[in-house]
Length: 472
Image (cartoon, rainbow, N blue to C red):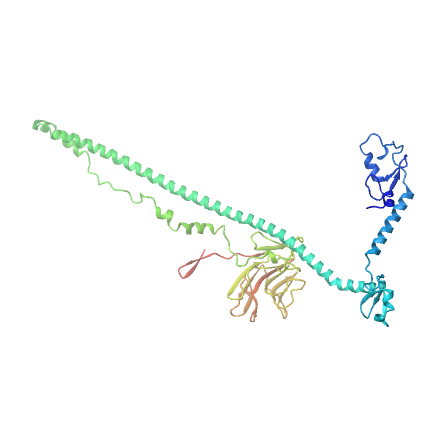
């Protein structure tokens, strides 16, 4: 329950201690905001208590009351603070000292007691400063850890958003590819059915004409036979009288060869159905390509842009992409999506007129954050402006090709421990590394050229026929 003095310092509108009090003509005081709110929307400005009209739009402040309220609030706050302080459990006195030997706060009576005789005592305020500094120092690792967690969480939020973007774009490209295939198959179906119907119509017309011709011959022969048979049934004198004309009529009909069906009259079913799916696939290969290496966009530096089919790459302005562990954060690097730890693998990279590139392989554990390429686990052929260099974990080898390289062939034979580079345009050998590769190796491309793309070239499609491969 509020005291009488506190009630005298309370606004009669909000019932709280006056805040910025003003006094009206009738001498009643209110909070400035309270009286303004009371008057809002009313035609007459009057006292909320006695209804006396106020002569002024902006009543003067009550400075004396304001100071009294501030002093009251300060005293109440100090009293609450004092009451909340813990007291000595033995003497019910305020704890003003700190015993360094017992590491506990004590009161002034405890200081003179036998328990703390000859102990080192310091003012609590003094010791609190040291403890605050130590606590602040011990808190710093947690604060740093919090920043790391917040940074990782922010990256996770960005990654979650990027996952949705990736899924949406990937779904769109899948649908586009299937639309192309559906359209090709539909057009091919229509073309083949059209060819079938054209053959059907042509051969049906030929057969119709042959049937009509046979019908005419049958009708003519039937008429001759019928007339002659009627004369044969006549009396002898009639036969003798009409014999000469009958013989001439019969002899005028030459004996034709027996009619035969024309060869090839039927639909050439084998032509339409034989190896149908293969023939369709054979035509489809014009719109289908296969590349032995597919680039992994999740490893691409933020300054790279990959083609939709993930076979070419070039530089562009930095994108806002998640800093996931697989992604390079230096230089314009990107890896192939598949690593190799056995077998023989080969792929061609078209470098064209680009003047800054690396083509090669890196080990699976090769660092992708904050490091440079000249370190263990990196092998490449490199062009920097006009200088060609072969880079290995141990050394670099400058070389000078006979002509500007337009394409680089990487040939990796893990079973024999060989990594070779060639110029596929001239079949010229560039360099071979001979060593035992103990880690999975990934194809690598680096570029810093914004105008020229580097591209993994497709290879001829192969289909297996028996024990041998047939190049298509």
